[in-house]
Length: 88
Image (cartoon, rainbow, N blue to C red):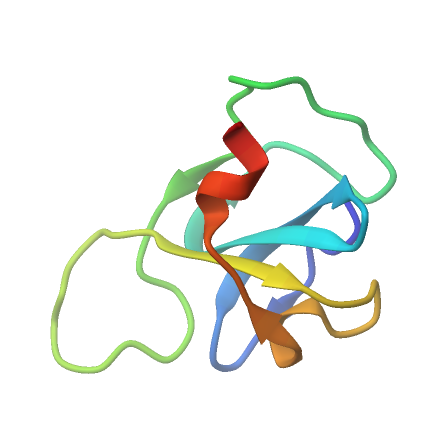
């Protein structure tokens, strides 16, 4: 876990580092069950879906998932990639 800070747009969110500069983002959470520096195993429950942050309309409880190739300080500002690469 490299980021679990809240933000105005993403709300409560978690960024996981997978190695080789691959990151995944889980945003608009209602609760975070992990903290920065923690190592998580595949299948771990890391948070609960919610509707925090900037949400357009009223989508209700949901999860914003993103897969990125970037760096620790701004993974969601760099390049998107096909998340299937993480599961091969």
